[in-house]
Length: 255
Image 1 (cartoon, one colour):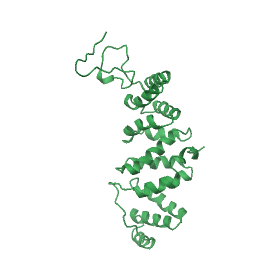
Image 2: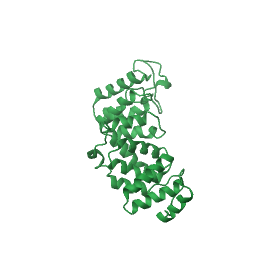
Image 3: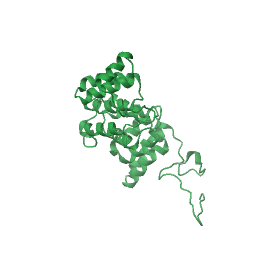
């Protein structure tokens, strides 16, 4: 059975129409040739007649059809463009809200991942981050998000602290637990935000459970409070770890 992103999760945060507007308006990607003057459908057809695999012409044709209200035709063309390249930001920007509306979260999150791997503006990246955070809060979408994170895309390093602080806490904990069972479990640094969040909420038992669970599943060699080694290589970056004293007159010692 295909997992689906629950509309009740996504709609209040983004809304497919709002997401589409933000992404299309801000799809300026260094690795993608800009399309400041979209071709008319006639001009695009002429270019395609010369080269049926002209990605830029196909994209312009698809976007032109979309502006004309021919969503199904645009979907067919832009879906084909996506099979030719994962680096065409305007195409991905159009497809993501379309796939969300269709309930096809697997392809939507795959396209989010592809777009997040590009050098995109923060104005474009921000709604994508919010979308991924929303996916962590839905039990049906979460395994797909974990699958993408387990591939260790470069944007994961900045995303995990955001997820730990901004996501629905139950969904965040479930995401970290599932990721711990993957080939790329969360690191101590990635987990620190969640542990600190639980401690700030006075959920000390929950914080220790998360820490112990990540250590047990991932084999993370965090420094235990009883260990006098003070090894920088294995230091626990959370509130459970050592924090050497610093400043004038400070002194750190093992008692």
